[in-house]
Structures are given as structure tokens and as C-alpha cells.
Length: 476
View 1 (tube, rainbow, N blue to C red):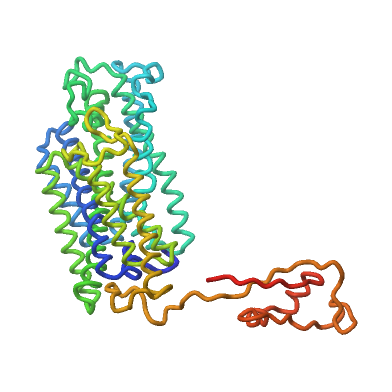
View 2 (cartoon, rainbow, N blue to C red):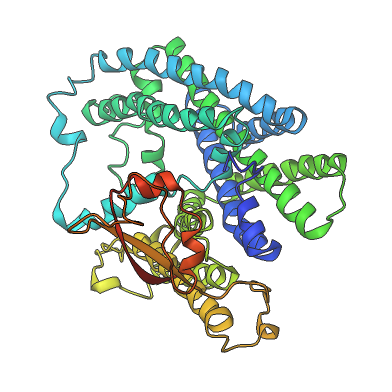
């Protein structure tokens, strides 16, 4: 995508599938960005409430305003430079906190409590783990937050290296969080601010508060504030990227390509800034008003994986993909995911895939990956079917091509000659001399094979000894 000079992730979709289909694919990307921003702003509000005692609504509003202001005025430059500083704060801040938490007197060595925090993987939940890992590995690709960095790289090589280094960086950044989680499971919470181990009373809210609770109860106050700075940096880094991504997609792929094609660069920039404010405001409102914002984000991330990932793969690597296939894959993928249910937001499963349901109606079958594969297969099958009907067999007139995917000048399949070289039993004489000593006549090929034969150089023919030719037909 960097080599093709695309500006946003949706550019190849709109160029291949049309502007309206691109707008349809914009919806899951937009919802994912909004709910992700809301989820992390909500996490920051909870962290500030625990450590500082600040009202969570006030902390959410202040954090969102700061992110919106410097993103709106600085654009990608401000996001990129602040991300560098924020990543350093995250890495240094959390690693400073880890030794204090590990060596606290109320925390037993995590090596001796490995059975408590490492957990076990049973065969019953293998499908759930496979599904989750696939969502993380592949569902994290079709996000504008990633592509706005990749497509802004100076060279294609830099874009590739950015992806590889980012992969390693994500793994390294996860280590402090894992260790802090192990500390939470290995600690004695009796005489702490909550009086019991987080989540033992069935509260999901306490599970999400593990990091600030560990910092508050098992690190010195100064160290806890350093950890708070790391958490704040992480939230700001993610929030500014998400709202900028949504603003860029709307300004370029919706406003310019669909609403006002003659918009100037200045006009697009103004629209992008207004969109940044609107997306930030919506994310802030969701973070304040909706407790199940994490559930909404999980659902949207699933839609990105099920809908956008197969579309992205095929728009780049499958040249026959068309709007009919894209629309069919979109609808089928979304239906299969929604009918699978989502307990976090109270959406019951309509389709119990292979009747593999847990006690809380959670799907044990990897239905997200199944829906993604079905969506991908639907795009391919529908694209090939429509091409067969309109072009290959011409069973439908082009006036029925409502999406204008095919044209009269599209080439029907043709038969061309394929030349197979074989070494004969004896040298073939040409005018009484060996083929190695005199200029040869090119072989006479039947049908379109004669045209193909004219393209072979003398050097190419001489390199295969005294050869005889077999000609077969291949349909392209």
C-alpha cells in the first residue's frame, strides 16, 4: 500500500469497489475508533480516581480535551512526536514500578504462585483461545491507526521495518503488565484499600482496576504517581491516534470522495478538524455514560476482523474481486458475527455453532474466525459468479450491472499457446548442419502460438540444446 501511494486504509477499497462501498466499509472502522477511545478514556478515569482521588468524569473530560486540542492543531506530526515521548514514559514508568511491586512485603514471590496467575488451558476452551489470538493477530491489521504511520513512512522499506519493529515493541511493552498482574494474584489484599483480592466478589470493574490498585497498595506514593504518568501516556497515545484516524477517514474518503469531490485541501483540513472534535466528544460521552463500553469495543473489533480483514486481503491480492463480492461478504460476515451473540452486552447467541456453548451462553467454537473465512469465501465466490455471468458467458446484459463493475472492453478468456521443450533422441539437422552452428528458423506454431513464437530470442532457443517443441493451449 505504501508503494502504491495510498493516503488512507480505505483508498484501495474505494478505487476498486466504488465510493459508496468504501463508505459502507468506513462504518466498522469508525465505530471501532470511537469505542476504543471511549474504553481507554474510561480506564484513565478509573485510574485517576483510585490513585489521585480525582472525579472520574472530570479526569475523562480533561484527558479528552488535551488529546483533542493537540491532535486538531498538530495533526499527524503532533501525534507522531508525542507518541515517541509517551512510549518512553510508558516503558520507563511501568518498569520503575515493577521492582517495588515485586519486592513488597505483602507479595510472595511470583515464581511460587505460578499456578495462581499462569492458569491452565483446557481443551474445552481451545476454540475461544484460538479465536481470541486470531482477532489480536489479524484483526489488528485493518486499522487506520496502523496505516497512517505506514503510509506516512518515507520509503517502502521504512514502512516494512516499522511493522516489524512495532511487533517486537508490543511484546516488550506487554511484559510489565503481565508482571503486575502476577503481583495482583500473589499479594495479600487483606489490609488494603479494598480488603479482598480484586474480582473475588464477582466484580468485573475490579478486574479492570488491577493496575491502579497494585500501584496504590504495593508501591510508594511517588512511584505510584510515576506509574500513573505511564498509564496516562498510554491513554493519550491511543486516544489521539484513534480520533485522528477517524477524522482522516471521514474527511478524505467520505467528504471528499462521496460528498464534495471538488473540495480544496484547506476545506478538507477544516472538515478533518471538526471530525476530530466530534469523534472526541462522542468517545468522551460514551466513556462517561456507558459502563459496558468495553463490550461495545470488543464487538466492534470483532466486526473489523470479520468484515474488514478479508476485504483488505482480497482488495490487495485478488484482482477479480468486485463490488458484488465485497457487499455480499460484508453482509454475510456481519450477520454471522451478530448471530453468534455477545454476552458482555447482553446479545444472546441465535446460532449455537455446533452446539458448543458454555454455561453463560459463550460460544466455545471459534465462530469469529469461521465468520471471517466464510466472508472471504463469499467475496471470492460472488465475484467469480458475477464475472462469469457478465463477461465469461455473457448470460446477463451489462445494463443489469448496477455497480458498473464490468465494461464492454473487458477481455473475454483467450487461448494462447504454451511451448514445452523436450530433448530429442538425436540432434535435429537444419539444412544439413547442427542447430548449434547455423542460425535456426523459428518453429511454426499453430493458432496464436505463432505470435508467441515470434517473441522468443535466438539466445533463448539456443539455451535448450537441440530441442523439439510441443504446443498446447491454455485458457487465460
